[in-house]
Length: 281
DNA sequence: ATGCCGTAATTGTTACGA
Image 1 (cartoon, rainbow, N blue to C red):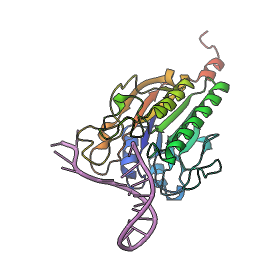
Image 2: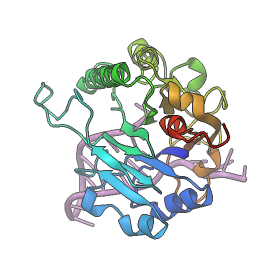
Image 3: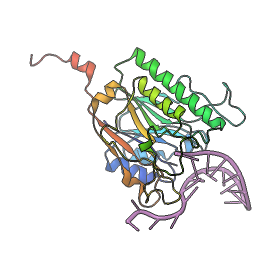
Image 4: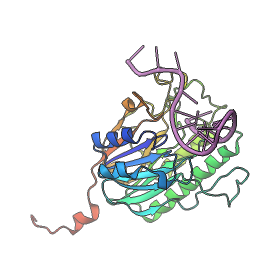
């Protein structure tokens, strides 16, 4: 399985670029974030014409996530258990959920496309919301791997955290002042790893950014951030054979400000192997 | 070079982004 994640910054504004990439790179599963449309506005036909099934979750012009897959997607969920909500003036336990998560089972792999809240500012209510959201995601991960430790689980998307200083090449993003690089955010990311996930791209692609702001020549100057990740359970990590960050997708006409991150997985059918008749035995 | 903000509500301006 070739699995990709991409914050597309509007699926309608660049659907042809997205589908062209998925076809050209022979992507099996493409997790998208910031589709920026309602489900009924999603350009389904162009994905289906290219041979993809699509599950999308979008409720307004903000946020929105989707998964396009060559194999059918089952067990679709549009939030994970415990996921908090947020709205202006309504930040409590009953706040409405945003369209920031969609999960499904694809060829035995549980895939989640995630758009972690931005945070906006260290003193902003959105920052506390971001940390609550990440803690809920950690709790979900811990719970599911406690009961299914061998599950191939992939949490992919825009985590809006630069986990190390090497992941921050933007001179305007400063520790102590900015979101994305604060200790609580980095601790929250590390807690996901402690819950049983690992970044399956970094061992194969140790450096490089996945996002460059549209302003201030950030891309030509290569002043970006690495904030888009593919986190996998042990079963996923053991299956990964290759990884890539498609930096070239930031070039040309009408790019997203993020680029796709891709892994190849060689997934043995663990249970099926045990059931195979011993023809040669 | 990869080039100086883009998108989607809306129709002048605001919200959002990282």
